[in-house]
Amino acid sequence: MAEPGRALPAPTPETQHFWDGTKVHELRLQRCDSCGKNYFPPRPFCATCGSRSVSVFKASGKAVLWSYVIHHRPVPGFTPPYAIAVVQLAEGPRMMTNIVECPQTPEALQLDMELEVVFEEQNDKITLPLFRPAKG
Amino acid sequence: MRRNAVAVVGAAETTDLGKIENLSQIGLHADAALNAMADCGLRPKDIDGIATAGQTPVELAHYLGITPTWVDGTAVGGCSFMIHVRHAAAAIEAGLAKTILITHGESGRSRIGNPPRRVDPQSLNGQFEQPFGPMGPPSMFTIPVLRYMKRYGVTEEQIAQVSVVQREWAAMHPRATFRTPITTEDVLNSRMIAWPFRLLMCCLVTDGGGALILTSAERAKDFKTKPVYILGTGESAETPMVSQMEDFTSSRAFRVAGPTAFQQAGISTNDVDHLMIYDAFAHLPIYGLEDLGFVPRGEAAAFIAARNTAPGGKLPMNTNGGGLSYMHSGMYGMYALQESVRQMRGTSPAQIDGAKISVCHGVGGMFAASGTIIFSNQTPADFW
Image (cartoon, rainbow over the protein chains, first blue to last red):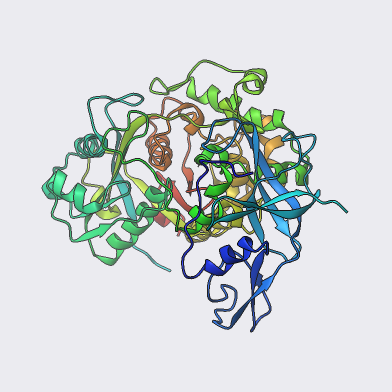
């Protein structure tokens, strides 16, 4: 399944929980214990209210397709044309990802279509969260 | 608030634009700086403030032989130079320096003395964007646009019109890279880069540079060049990650920087004779026209397609042809500033007759940052 050659993340102390989560097939977001805001990308404080009192929680993995491009140029680990997408998670935050199990065409990739997370292992340290059309 | 006015007295681009194989990046900075000094009759010893991006102000001070009392290395992408103008004006008003040089040089095409760009895999971009296959701005800056198109019913044909109109302006500029007229069909038939963006909706990649010299309006009278006054300025930043923009149909950085500049200048959009909106890609003038309040939400693409910003239109925009046709070294903001200064001096090859106010609006990164400068050839006392 792994697509060799793509750029891979190098976790930092503030993001390790996210990558530990994808490894066990959990999409982990954070929530501010003070103001209730759900947020991403990871940081050990809330950028809405400044509180350091925050929790990690498992997201539903449900999302909608927010916007994308279909890239036609070669990039290591990818076969063009392929979509680089941003999805809006059910919990509110948006994240960049790829859409899999779906033709990479404007006709198949409709904005606001429902998606669900899938996890694609890259190596023993990194598993990436990708999204596919929701299966009901 | 009563302020001390500041003016641009020196302005120049590099001797050549396009493919420059006999100068490294710092050499392009220096060539532009020497041209700007020659423009207003100054030498390095006359400069006491230096701002730049791409290189450090330390490198430029040393290379050019300047002993500064003020330095600014703000590097937030292509609008860094707008922000340098803003900071320089404040520094001159505050008495931190008297004569400030702002330089840009970029070997974007030949890549001589221009270190390769690399996204740190530990950065937020490196962890949460780069693994999904983007390759630089053409595949990133364009991501929000489908959401804009869906919300407002904007078509690929309308976005293509931005490129068509700007080529008409470029045709008037002898130094523009692309001057041959193009049609909407040419744009829509050009090579696909990142759907819905095709080659002719994307900026050039060229070599070049530019420099500006600012001093107090009072001292500006001693120079042979026609002073171009700074009426208002604004700056802001939003996010280094395009995926984390608050609103995919509008830039928060634009919505902060633009109005800040208009408020300081004491003018409204109706007062503007000439407009530059940084166009690394064809959607940027659309976002800029709306975020700066020139056009209601969702109407900018139709506004451009109706030729309002074209030669003869009521709001001449990107009259050098922009990053789409004039030149784009990577951090294009300096060239937009140069065209605003030319228009205010009355020396642009695409001169707008009688233009008194020019707005120059820049973007940095991919909707990451923004800077807006409002210039006039009338003394600020007429506005403040």
